[in-house]
Length: 126
Image (tube, rainbow, N blue to C red; front, side):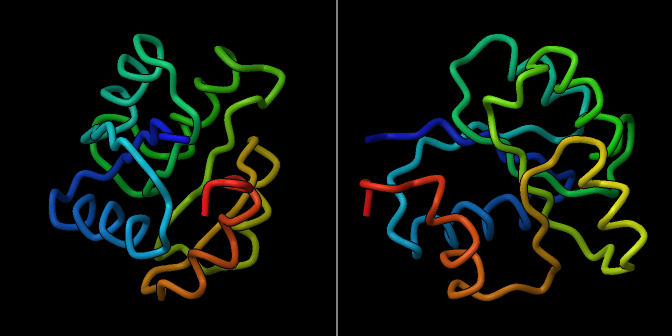
C-alpha cells in the first residue's frame, strides 16, 4: 500500500535523507514535504496523511508546537507522529511523548534503527 508521509524539516537535505531512508527500509511511500510546522499543518489538513515525521527545531513553528496543533485536528491520534531530532535529552523525549508523538528517533540514525522503529506502522507493506 502506498502511504502518504508528511516529512517536516526546515533543511531540504534532511528531508531528502529522511525520504531516502524510508525507501531504503523498503517502505512504499509518497512523500509530502513541509518546511516547518505551520507549513505542515496546512498540508496535513489538505491531504490524506498516513504518518507525520518531523524535526523538532525549525523556524516559524517548531515540531513540538506542530504536534500540539496536529493533535487538535486529530485528537484520537489516528495518524502516527514520529519525531526525528537531535534532542536526545530524556526530559525532551518525555515532553514530546506527552504531547502526542508515537515514536522518537535521535539523529544521526541508521536505516536499521528506522526500520525497527517504524515497521509496525507499515505492517503488510514490506
